[in-house]
Image (cartoon, rainbow, N blue to C red):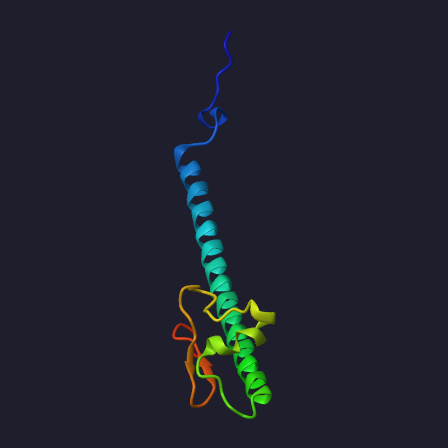
Length: 114
């Protein structure tokens, strides 16, 4: 004679599976949000670091050229990472920094300094 199975012995119900899928979707969305925030902070930190390096290169240029500031940021390239410098934003590598030749200040339109 065949044994009788109750409804719960057959496996998970559709409702239970949908709840599990919903919980997994929520966890994945939280992980994506956390990753995006961390990625944006890392790009901003890299951009600010590149700006600082460019300003240090401008100061070095000024010291070696009797106090004259470079006419363009490209003139200070030999002082940025030994000539292979990063004169661009870490988020958008096609966007060069804005250089003010009057003050020697280097800035980025995406990540202004605080």
